[in-house]
Length: 363
Image 1 (cartoon, rainbow, N blue to C red):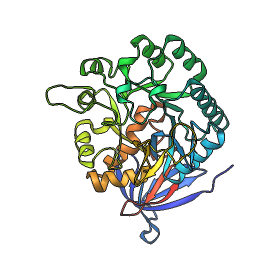
Image 2: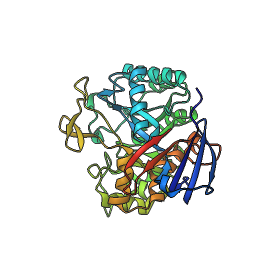
Image 3: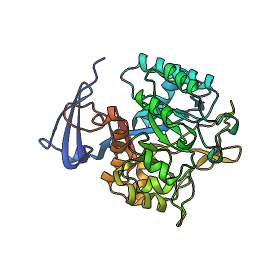
């Protein structure tokens, strides 16, 4: 269906790489046709435009966890929720479960992506169950284990390109099995782990290219004993996600992490939704969710994350764009140029006011 052509007047336009002022953005059939200053009218202008956001870890929306409702309907709800909240590209995620739940989730994402090839669904992020039990967090201990060769083989066969990322503890998975997974195009992320400093640096940039929710479900830093957390902060070959809600990680520690990681640090929401079904009963506890008393996920959105980066962490608008759009796009290589607001690209962007509140998501 042909989309309506539209012209936007913008006071501050961020194309993903740079800032332009007093811009006229012409959109034709959903694509950016022209970016110029000709005919700019301040009386019609929006305050700020930034690229769409990217969320690589989201479990569900509107009381539907993907793991409990592995269906096209759930993914439609997630897709719609995120588009309204400024996030075109999203990676639906499941926690540690028995394999039959993982297989059903793979099938749901596969069917959804086949039926909606132009959607922002990136693929399935499987967080667990190959974790260190000492760093299980809110994950259920009975499901956590080291994988066998046959279990990895079946995951690969069932996935056929649907799984885009797996979070695992490197110390509980044989290197040859990790190599098999990356040979299938699956990104491996270190998380829920007590991996030591030496092993982490051996794997980073070769087998493992990112880490999951920095500081959470990781060893505490020690000034005489570098560990996984230290390795993530110091190694330039690994990206890391971080949750910027002020509860999972204090804003001052986000600031420290950014000073060390720069463009290798990116934001996720790690957002769950309230549910009374299944083994993960997420309950709203003020600004976050808990499961059996353990911090189990956030309720933040990417626009709120973006605003926190500027107002609470002290980053610039461009640095915040890197955290919420550019850097996660570099992790998922196929997105590397799709989030930029350049002539010929799809028109996917967020309109903000000067207080960095989301006014409208265009996608």
